[in-house]
Amino acid sequence: MMQHLLRISGGVSNRSANTVPEKPSRSSWHRAITACLAAVVLVLTGCQSSPPQSSAPTSAPVSTSAFPSTEAGKAMEWIHTVLEQDADVAEGDVEGRFSQEFTAEVPPTELVSLFNENLRPAAPFEVTDYAGDELTSSATFTGSEGDPFVVQIAVDADGTINGLLFTPENDHEEATTLEDAEARLDELPIDVNYLVTSGEKNIAASGEQDVAPIGSAFKLWVLLAVVNSIDDGSLNWNDELTVEASNKSLPSGDLQNLPDGSTVTVREAAQKMIEISDNTATDLLIGAVGREKVDALVPEHMRPVATTRQFFELVWGEGSDRLGEYSEADEQGRAKILDSLEDLTVSATDVDMDTSKVSAPTWAASPEEVADIWEQLDSASEQHPELDEILGANTAVSVSGYNNLWFKGGSLPGVLAGSWTGETESGDRVTVVLIASSDDATAVNDNTMELLLLGGDILTLLAS
Image (tube, rainbow, N blue to C red; front, side, top):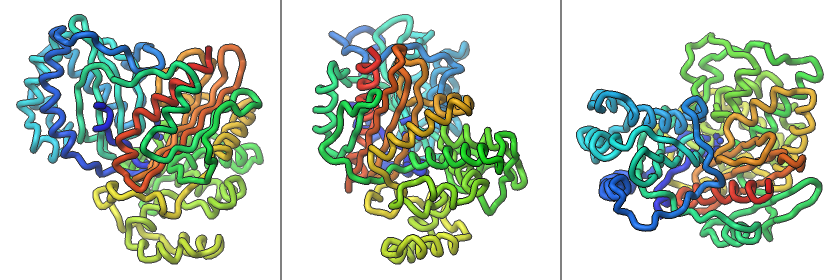
């Protein structure tokens, strides 16, 4: 399955599926793009027999303006744009877009030749079936001639493309029943805890409902703390937050790139925290409401809530020499350790994303606890319509049949969470929570798109 070559963003941040910066093992991507050139030619010249059916829950076209503003979404939009430009693609067009490791194995001349000779002749393209997270995306391109093909992208935290695949249409087979989707989730070679609710009923659940790492999905509790602070008058959506060297985190996101002293509103930070899982935005909001307000909302086992900056330092920075002490400490002891981590001694390139962090002390929750925070946010949206735009901007998969659909994912090496809630056109509230983990980080990476697409299948089944 070609999606097994995909890499997913980490969870300090999606998921869409929403992440800490990743440092993927890229050799398989580099080898694969060369191997896939022949497949692309076959697809575009119509030599592929019996092309598979579309893999996504729906085939709603993705307009140029509708690509998610995640780094992976922007990279997919760039691919679409460059394939449809009037002039032939030149080496200058791809310069700086791909990582040095990538271009060392796939030279720009080869990329330009692929674009101009094998892909652009089929323009214009309709893009459908977009799915992805902050650092990984997949979409189907249907041209004016030839068979559709799938573009799969992985990017570094700064948006540099480190993985690119062009393949025949995705071989994900859409689940036809809820029982089918459950069976396939259970068969994945990773641990998957899941819960599906419709209205007041739990209609599907894994045998285990354990607490497990959820990566950036913890930002849902931060968002609720922001809403509560607005309700009690201590904060306003229009209040300005100042970005300083002392509160900048590492990607995902882009606020860390702003000059010191720059300001963003609470509303802008909340949008970025959810839509592109901006870590600096998250930390700004935790600082604005106070950690105690977030701690009051999260499950007891998640307290104290670390900022993303503190987590980077504790797990990968010089603070990692206190990781064992932190794991054994009580809530008060952990809070003291977090407060001592003032400096950020790690950079995005220092982060090891090939070693699973499933056992690291991090944000964690059970599927029921994630479903509960969705219910609280849904209730709060009656007084805060801003939540619909914040939570609905990046749904990770393309699904129809809902009046609104919200998503938040998260990932770390060896960890992936995807969660959705939405109101169907018939008025039912559907919530889907998928939490996957493994001691083998590659196994989670390899099954990321299948997990997200199965989540989309479940949403589609419950919308009908």
